[in-house]
Picture 1 (cartoon, rainbow, N blue to C red):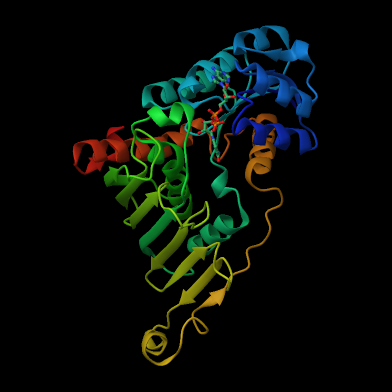
Picture 2 (cartoon, rainbow, N blue to C red; picture 1 turned 90 degrees about the vertical axis):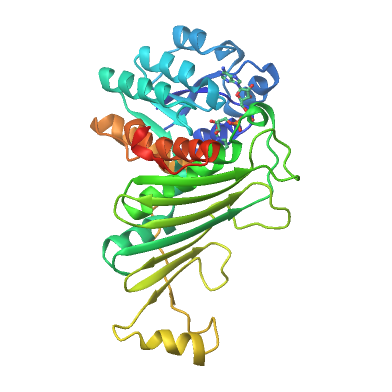
Length: 349
Ligand SMILES: NC(=O)c1ccc[n+]([C@@H]2O[C@H](COP(=O)([O-])OP(=O)(O)OC[C@H]3O[C@@H](n4cnc5c(N)ncnc54)[C@H](O)[C@@H]3O)[C@@H](O)[C@H]2O)c1
């Protein structure tokens, strides 16, 4: 598949290597207003100088391609992705699809009108463990979901356009976990109450820490803590999850030496509950480790293959633009709740 990539510095360099190293994909043009980024990426991807461009319009006008990967800064996604859709190219756009719902909906409409695959890179769900957890939940391994506690903490420094955002944490990072919630629970969010603030160790203008209480349409309640300003703490990018259902719990913690996914199944008479808490040392008896089946290529490679398969079969990607409106709605609703101090109905977005 012949790829134009827009935004090749910063995280774009990850995409440069991913496309280069994935059989069946090759860069045919690169776009970035920064000449140094363009030169570095051009050398790695072996794209000659005449197919390196400072703006998307020139690339679209000069080079034949089968799709665009949009890894430009979030505020540029609408301009870049809409130009490619209007030129008849399928688009794989980095999250957030856009920083406004109006523009995100416009992109979804454009793609639908032209019957083009518009997919958002929410690659956290395209890993072995979340795939296995979702299957366990769907099979009823822990009954009906009652509540979830999800925690993410990493010390992160953000630069450039992110330093000016009002809600850099929620829009840049929390959005991955919100998408994971939707995926794991198989449900969309109904209401959210969030509080955000900016700890002293942060290097941004906007808020780098958040608490959120979220109710999902299927009745599940989620307690989310997220921070990019937590020196000395590192939950890993997926975060730590405890998902509690009516007959047991699943814990997902990539830092757990006993295994990243563990399940505790409660006996019908709840006898284990007594045993576990009062008479047996933890963590030896605590649940069983679940070794997730490998799904093959994961993360961004999964993004690429899935996008390509959907283009070929003319089907909707799992994380299509249309599906992703629900993830963006939850994220924007959380920022709105933080700004107003009120519980926000997600469907309002
Ligand atoms: N999926 C993930 O895990 C993940 C991780 C990091 C970043 N991202 C996303 O990737 C996107 C880019 O983030 P980043 O960290 O690379 O930002 P960045 O600021 O580090 O780099 C952006 C690059 O885009 C270039 N650029 C600026 N304006 C442009 C335009 N109009 N057209 C093309 N290129 C332009 C810049 O010169 C720079 O090289 C964002 O949407 C971000 O949320 C996703």
